[in-house]
Length: 203
Image 1 (tube, rainbow, N blue to C red):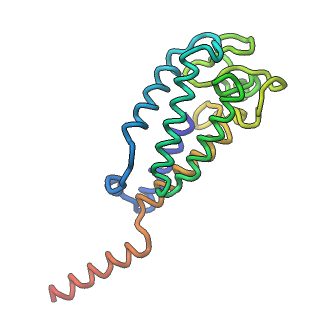
Image 2: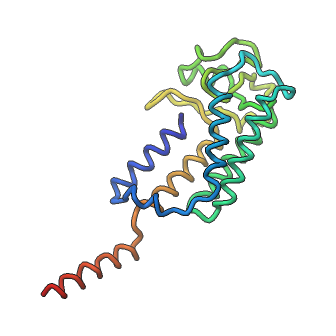
Image 3: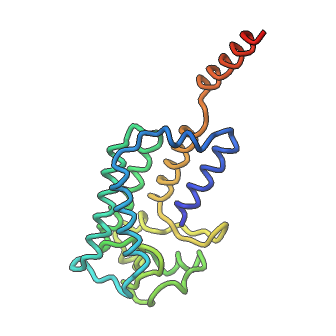
């Protein structure tokens, strides 16, 4: 959810700065179908959660981790796009946290409580899944690389928990939309010259 919010705010900011959505159509994006496949896998796993983390023997775990590998491959293929180095860093940090904690993103009960989302946990024992997320409950003292898990929480403008990796993802999205949608100074100068030339010819 935090990523959808970041993308929405980034687009709104770009439009407020004079950016145009039509510029996104000019972006040469490679392996887009692979990104769609990765998101489809995540939707199935996230929105049909098992009550408990089944561990490494579950195909769901490998599909979820595989979706992150696919997304990283897409980002690497598009690494020249603005902000995508931050996106790659964010995905890598999230994947590292998940690999260290049984294939799902670790979250503590305390973080869920701070966000007002404690009711979404499908249990109170470690290993319980969290509804509509890739999270699994892990006690902080038992979590590996806990600092990379969903340790950050907000209640406004929406209730959610998120990770340091998500912050980098949001930063990458911000850079991408600002650089892609908003005209650069050279573009503005070119447009001004075209307007001046047109007015001179009309005179």
